[in-house]
Length: 451
Ligand code: IFM
Image 1: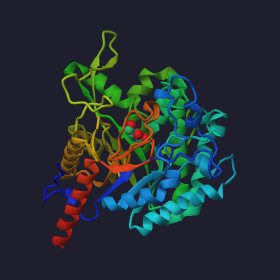
Image 2 (image 1 turned 90 degrees about the horizontal axis):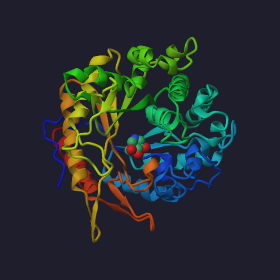
Image 3 (image 1 turned 120 degrees about the horizontal axis):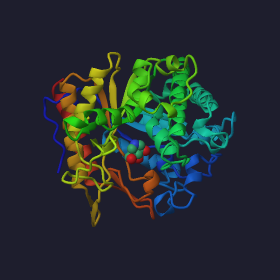
């Protein structure tokens, strides 16, 4: 099977960026090497019953040692860019103490990417808060937002425009709500009040870092990455329920950036849980972005329960991936069009993550992952459709380059286009990776023949 991009597709446009993405804790391992200190995930993984099979990121894909091999593999796929995240506690293993070994580790990776012609997209925070900051309250402590701005300063002073594209936070929804509201992710705090307070401090951290990044790396692009999960009503009587779910979900993290306000419908309904917001915070949070990164995987269909509350209506007849998420490519088109319509000041967007965890079949040295291939094909088509409808999208990153530590699911869910044997650390390109490479080759040919 291969991916087909029609010759008139907007994805053929020469400046459109194709890439693959990973994150530090999910692939690096080497958690006690190079001066790194624990993050909240190192701690969380040691709690009983929170991560599948008691898995942890101690070794993960051993990228800490295999990074050169991995970058060669990325370049060989023919992508234009690599999106990675840096580990805060590798760079600042103690409060205010910069670790030259940590900076060197990422410097080597970035230089190697550039040598291979890859652009580098770096996320500063992909959920691995240093444990020493969690010990002081983590994202419930307003001070953490200021610590984040200092960390952004260290990274951007050191790397400047060597990092082509900076991202402050990856999916603040997940850090705040899964980590501090529902207790599913590190640090495992449960409480609506805590969830909203952590969310506000994360958004403040983002806003405080933006001018720092602009000052230190004026030639790079700077933005935020959010996960979006569009909410569809079961029927016309559920429209308000679906709107509430979206507002209490992804819009909670996008509205403040582009409108300077949190969604009113949530502020009114959940008034007792609203965060403490100091004067000037919303101005800081709504600093203009160069781009917005969108992570899309699936949608939710929302009904109303007998108490009048929004409730997820499982789509039992629909196709799902192994992780249990509905395959719904149209949601990608819909949500991108919705964002364009909702915000007059929306900057260009990148799809910074899209992909599927599937039940891949291994046969000899071949990894058959037809469902993932179909997933990418239909989502690229849905993306093309959004661009045709006038949405400004500049790039697309597959999640993920390789199988890795999938948070509370441990290693049981494989999102990679490259298979990782966790015993031997052998990497094998799945059929989806071969198809991705074929599609990129074909795309380059089409581009050069039209020039
Ligand atoms: O693996 C995660 C990633 O860290 C953030 N976005 C969603 C992916 C799949 O769950």
